[in-house]
Image 1 (cartoon, rainbow, N blue to C red):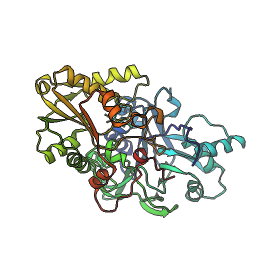
Image 2 (image 1 turned 45 degrees about the vertical axis):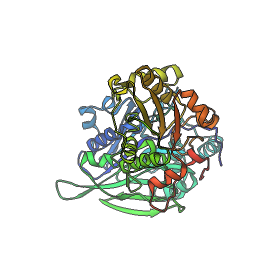
Image 3 (image 1 turned 60 degrees about the vertical axis):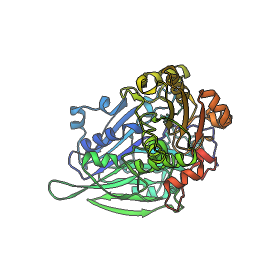
Image 4 (image 1 turned 90 degrees about the vertical axis):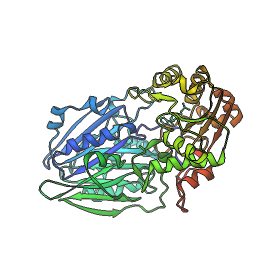
Amino acid sequence: MSDLNYKSWNEECAVVGVYNIQDASNIAYYSLFAMQHRGQEASGISTSDNKKLFITKNKGLVTEVFNKEILCNLKGNNAIGHNRYATAGEDSSADAQPVFANYDLGQVAIVHNGNITNAKEIKDELIKEGAIFQSHMDTEVLIHLIAKSKQQTLTDRLKETIPKLKGAFCFIILSRTKMFVIRDRNAFRPLSLGEITNKDGTKGYIVASETCAFDLVGATHIRDVEAGEMLVFDKQKIQSHIIMQEDPYPCVFEYVYFARPDSKVFGRLVYDIRKSMGMELAKENPVDADIVIPVPDSGVAAALGYSKQSGIPFELGIIRNHYVGRTFIEPTQEIRELKVRLKLNPIKEIIKDKKIIVIDDSIVRGTTSKQIVKILRDCGAKEIHMKISSPPTISPCYYGVDTPTKSELISANMSNDEVCKYIGANSLSFLSLEGLKNSIGDGNYKFCQACFDGKYIV
Ligand code: AMP
């Protein structure tokens, strides 16, 4: 394995690619809007009108970065786009994507989701040879490799260079006339292909991290991009090349937390899986209580499943203010704690004098659970049983999910009882690894769950 202390800055994120669709920038914009949950720090779109590339990117939410005029100036029927996930403490205006470059074959723009685990080794090698880097992004590594390759076409250069990269990556690359879509050999991060019929009857294509983007722009989901596959979109057609071959190990955390419940990820509806996780949790961890409440929004589907399985009524005991960013956005612990309070407000009338089961999807540092228990106690809850619809998070992710280092992961450093005491609940239980497997339950469970069992695929 490569140097695990190397922290790269291309994590989670959302990517979209649009090919041969009129007003491609608008389609990319709405797709990024649908996938805002995958990254709120920066957003960017690059388009091509078959003669040249256009690009706009900036820090901020999709609606802050783009307006009608900007989208009009992003000309052409092909587009790629990116939402960047917030990473603690970095002023990263240089790290917004797409990354744009001029090289011997012309112009190219690249977006990337994931984390290349050998990026540092390749980068060090390139720097020794005289290369200059302008950002922290792994994406620049790919640009240098493409520029150095002696192959005659970009297709061949990608076939030659991409297999040198290890880890989790989805790349979408736009040249003046073509679009290239690549998913890593283990298919860690999701990437789906859809189609749209244009007004003139021609077919247009869209590739996105999550299918919720297709719903918004009226595209039909055709299939997922395969592990190790490169799709080349050229002259209104798609060619598929398998450029790397290994077993797929998609990321189970997409089901637990990251993806939107209305997306189909790795061929399954996320909502259904989260509900099953809640049902499994109820089978494994029954407890006498008056109501089941979710931590919104992350615990809602699992809490419905828990309530269905246990027969204990579901209530929305905590209401979320949707106009506050996610709790991980601010780097310091004090601000993180304040953010939980800004975001979640309990309904006292529902909570008072009740024995409550609270469901959330995961415990990372323990900040959210501790605050939730405190606000429920302040409302007069009689008992608080915290139940988590995934196993304890004990290992950091090196394949694209922004988890803190092992020393900050509370369950990596404390026993279940100690965590329960720390958060102040009457009881605490997690879904078992077996329960997680049962909830996905297709008999052929093969996922990367390194965050839960510490077994890294790469
Ligand atoms: P913590 O408060 O540190 O224990 O984090 C747990 C909370 O953060 C839960 O409510 C999760 O829904 C949410 N969460 C889990 N993983 C992530 C992640 N990678 N990025 C942002 N939020 C997360």
